[in-house]
Image 1 (cartoon, one colour):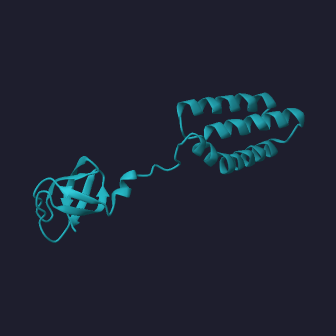
Image 2 (cartoon, helix red, strand yellow):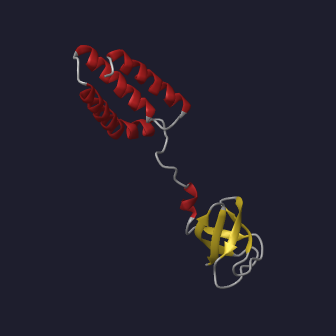
Image 3 (cartoon, one colour):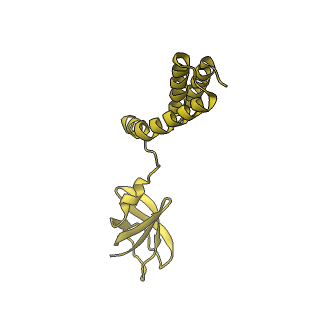
Length: 144
């Protein structure tokens, strides 16, 4: 059975763990949940299973309802999206002659990219082409 002060120590340790994993905002909620159980246990003596159940409920509810707004407040994303996906269907300009299936350079938004010709005919230098999709830092392009 954990006493109220054990919950408080566990809460502070969990909140300290958040400092080691910046930007995740999981340990902070576990720490706050442990502190809340410590306060409740100080006021009302509870059986060990009730304390753990209360901790679990506090943790799940706080993560479910408060993590997303906190991530949005600090402009963090829960998932790491790829902004290069927004390049699909944009028009690029071939900087090299690129044979079918070959790799060369293309210019898009003022930046030189590695480009693979996925079209059915070769691309010539300065020809406009469409971005089909992006793989890492390589544009897959085809003739317009």
